[in-house]
Length: 199
Image (cartoon, rainbow, N blue to C red; front, side, top):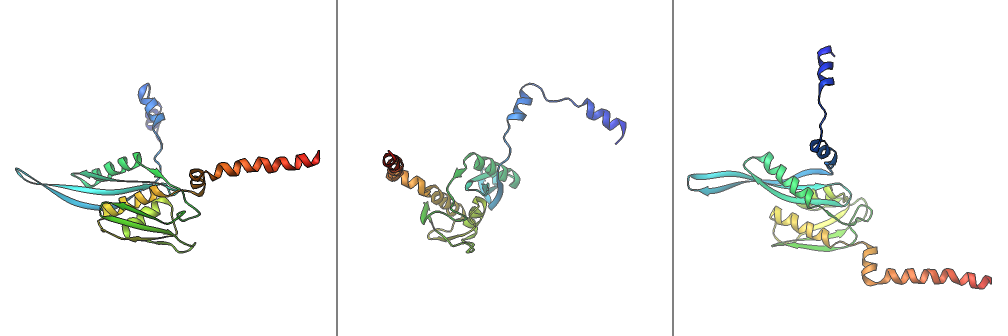
């Protein structure tokens, strides 16, 4: 490295004020982005036709957190960037048991319906292309899924997201049924019994 390069690096100014605070506060990018579908759109205007692109993107961290969004722009990269930003803002979290879902569920969105069922270890992801990418982004490796309605990629992916929102863990279901509280109350009573015998 030459002396001129060293001098330039030393003279480089550090960010100050609001700019420095913004750089520190900016969150790290979480998860992996996958493009599910890209479509070319046409808008008829007075002067003729205006071409554009629509991108369907999924963002997931591989641990039960996933987001989906659609972005539209005149260029493919801009549409993908828009969709990715929106998907990161609207990510949802759902429970995973091992490497599969906790229970059977059906998600509906528009005319599309997706049925999902837990699978034994080693089964793999048995699902259509759009739902498969969503499962992989969420970190689910064993699941059975079937499209029961429309095969429109956008509606199919959003139906899968609706199914994810319905998933509940065993502990959450016990709390809703009031069983968790009953178990907690019984535990101290059993623990107190040996103490009385000792006296």
